[in-house]
Image 1 (tube, rainbow, N blue to C red):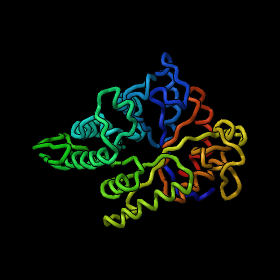
Image 2 (cartoon, rainbow, N blue to C red):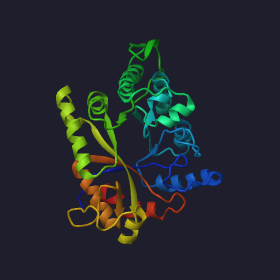
Image 3 (cartoon, rainbow, N blue to C red):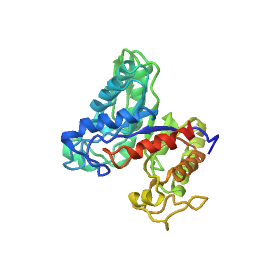
Image 4 (cartoon, rainbow, N blue to C red):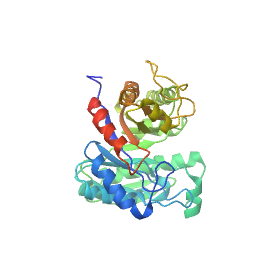
Length: 321
């Protein structure tokens, strides 16, 4: 693995119960601090998810948590994975992001998306239009946000949003990167090609990931955008253990699943995580890097026991630094 191309790794801690880690509400803050105290010693960035709740689970609000992290941990990048455009007017998001960029001394990148979970929209009283309209709103929102970050005063008149002589002072310096999360092939990936600095996808089997990359490339060709100018990022869980078989067991995989080039299990049609001993995990991330993904946002199943995170920091991250 010596000489492997660089990958930046971000850690996505739980903001509450998301069905992956065990959350102890009464001990959550201590558990979170313990995890972040370790993660910030090796990960490049911390990423916070934006959901209000799927049903009745315990969960903190994204921006409040991110601001707390920004203040407590001054040496790592900060981002959202990804903020739902449906929850906040984009002009307010632009102002919030500009403020955080100033307060964090330039460590923020805006991860943004159209919103996808209908139940939480309905429960909290947010409109939930059809998918195509949500993407149309996303496109306008990004234009509003960029205008407020780069123009003074800023004006925009669209179908869904408008601003008139607005100021987002102090304007952010540097202007945050905008990462669009989503993989709808007709509209979302076209918006990525037109407006995104970075693109984020969720974990998929390798052939499906390659197909999404090919669709994005086609949209870039169509709009006259350099495909290589868009950074490719991936959200994926990591199951790592010194015992290869134990890691697969924890991930719910079997040795009959998909294989890497050297025969180690990677993805199969039902499992979209990286799993294995450190050598296998390195190999799988190398394969993703060769596809073009150079920023990985990951999580670990056990929120309280940090042995997997520490093993990952000791034996995986240094190989891609």
